[in-house]
Amino acid sequence: MTQSNEAKSNPEDILKTGQFESADGSVNVQANQAETHDIETDAGTSASDAEAISTLQQQLEAANAQVAAGQDALLRLQAEMENVRRRHDKQIEDTHKFAVQRFVEGLLPVLDSLESGIQASGDLESIREGMKLTLKQFEDTLGRFKVEAINPEGQAFNPELHQAVSTINSPTHNTDTVVNVFQKGYSLNGRVVRPAMVQVCKK
Image 1: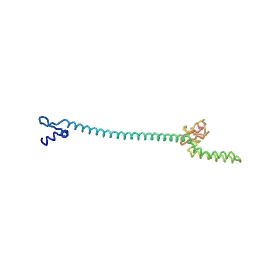
Image 2 (image 1 turned 90 degrees about the horizontal axis):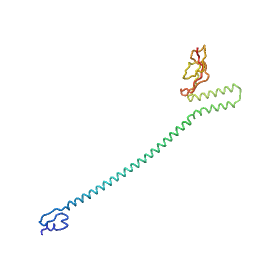
Image 3 (image 1 turned 180 degrees about the vertical axis):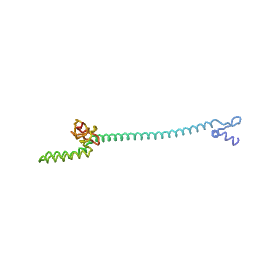
Image 4 (image 1 turned 135 degrees about the vertical axis):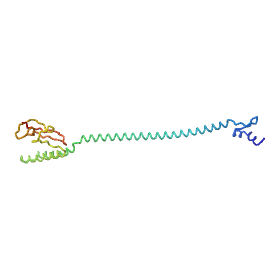
């Protein structure tokens, strides 16, 4: 037996090479080579699948983490928006409650002067002078808050500012001229709060 025949008769060599000598001396290639290749291919596919699954799991975990972070940020934003809304409502409420605070502060000195005038003693002229000073203080306070008196005596009648309560034939006035002012009107920032009650000349 030659060296080649010895190798072909060795079972391990036959499995390794997949060759053996048949009865007629021919050499055959057995299917175990293909099977070995299939096993190796299956092993490679399984490793690749495991790696893909691991990658997908990592991506899923990362996506879940992003979703959780987004939900947390959304909850924080909703809480902050609710706080902003509450602060805004409180500011509006305070604005309505204390809108006239400065006006009240301006009137308090006038109130003090009136109380002092009531307690004061003296002749009628002194009391009258005190009342004039208090009235001037009151008018100045109203002026600081853009409250202006409407006193149209001698001016042309304006139905947007004046309310005519009667007419009179006056030889010294033109037609539609305010002859007398029964009650002064007032405006706030240019808007009429109360029209002046007047008597108008009609000829």
